[in-house]
Length: 100
Image (tube, rainbow, N blue to C red):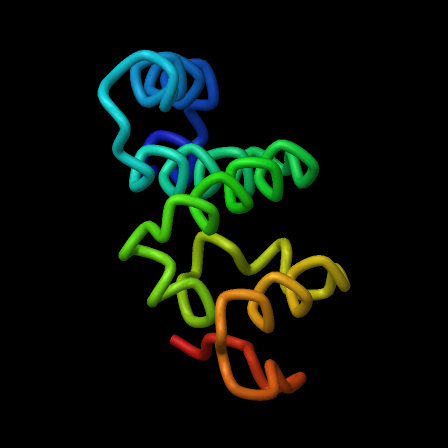
């Protein structure tokens, strides 16, 4: 994730290639981290597709979804609130901003 944050999207894409859930044993945390990289790259549709895979696999990392800064670019998208509700976050209110 540091690669995207420091302006190195080519390296981030290499990391994405290594993290593809299809390339290893079933580990749905991979899907979560792929989603985070896609979100940081501004690729919302891909990010949501991987978040859905992570949800279906009950990735433990989803416990941090509502506050993870990597997903800040997705918070205004209605799909984000819907996903939070499907995961089981209570009411998924509009106060999901992270203030660092």
